[in-house]
Length: 191
Ligand code: HEM
View 1 (tube, helix red, strand yellow):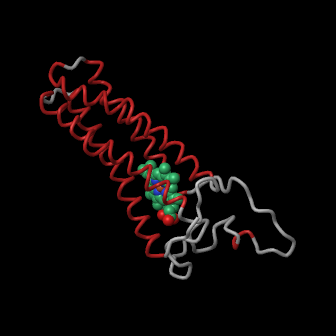
View 2 (cartoon, helix red, strand yellow):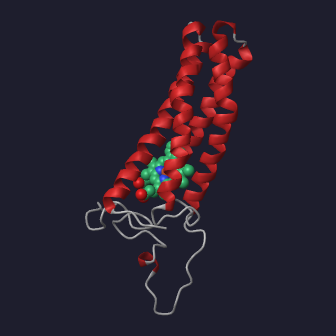
View 3 (cartoon, helix red, strand yellow):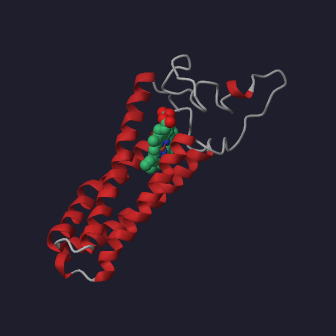
């Protein structure tokens, strides 16, 4: 797979952060609308707003996050199947994408169309679904910053070969954990 220039990698990481954390923000807004609806806010305002939000922001962002995240893994030394934290995020995001497109979006659009005529069951859905997805997105964010669990397969150690920290097996002191980051090691602050 072709490697990116440092500028290309920074641009891709920026796109990844904007889309994924934007997705989290849209999710929190859906949750706020759901809670407002249950607390007696005007259903003819709250539920059509949730329908618009899910159609024009939440669902498109879920596709964008999956695409940009997958490309970020494939075009950087992280790879899609090399590090457990990347693979777990990929599986989590893929499951969420399916649920968002097949279940959540049609249900919230239906709720938006019914507005004041929506039953209690549908109204509770607009609290439970965003609460669950927000929790999953927070887990994905923590996985991204902590990068736990190491590699899926280690490269065989050759006698006299480089130490693990040079092979990307362990964090280099003062640098980003794992494959060459967007900051140079010399410029990275000591942690
Ligand atoms: C298809 C799903 C995803 C894949 C394959 C993926 C993969 C990656 C990869 C490879 C990086 C490192 C990029 C680099 O160093 O240039 C990264 C960074 C990051 N990802 Fe994801 N990601 C996915 C979804 C998500 C989601 C859903 C979130 C949060 C809502 C998220 C949050 C982050 C954050 C905050 C970073 C920056 C970590 C850092 O620079 O220390 N990602 N992701």
